[in-house]
Image (cartoon, rainbow, N blue to C red; front, side, top):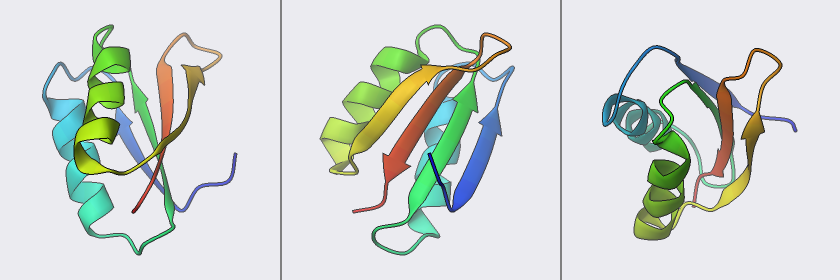
Length: 76
């Protein structure tokens, strides 16, 4: 998936991946896509809740080749 900005949150534990994503989204234009890569096992639930809470749609989530979690959020 194409994205406009990326946040590498590997090695960071909750709530840092969410906080980094929130900061990055605030700097983006409406409609742009943010890719977040994280290793925190709780990040899957965290990003689903974050998307619902903020209204920034979670377009896709999955795993990278190196077993990290990958999230694509669209700026509302």
